[in-house]
Amino acid sequence: MDCRENEMPSELAHTAQLFLDFMTRITKLEELVAVSGRLLAGFHQELAKVLLDELECLMEDGIGVMRAENESSLQFLDKLSAFDLVHHATCFEKERIIMSLDRNTSSGELESYCLMWDLRPFINEVVMHQAWRYIP
Image (cartoon, rainbow, N blue to C red; front, side, top):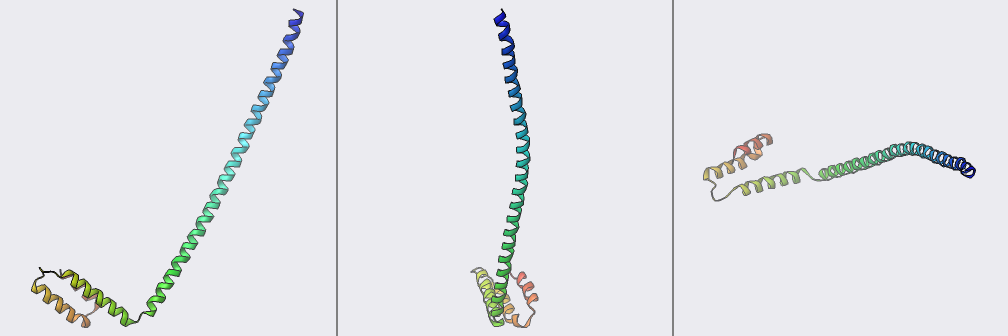
């Protein structure tokens, strides 16, 4: 029994040492989890900043494109003469009138269109547009 009694304390010491190593590693693991959580949170915050900066750059680029397009449109409109604008508007109105006519158009409606078209140069544009709404 002497031999077994001597083995018990050494086994107990070995088991205690294993338990101590195990607990030390668990503590280190918990510390690593805490540190990695802080690092991940910092990374997440920096990533959000980078994304916001990128979105801001894209927004500025979009605004620049829109301004350039507006400038281009204004330059195009400046190049058109007043005659061209009137001509295009007249053609558009003629096309609209022709598209609205069909076989079932009454002679009264045709006379209304003709009268409106004849009076057009002498009447304010706003009044003309209001009058066109009343003609089917």
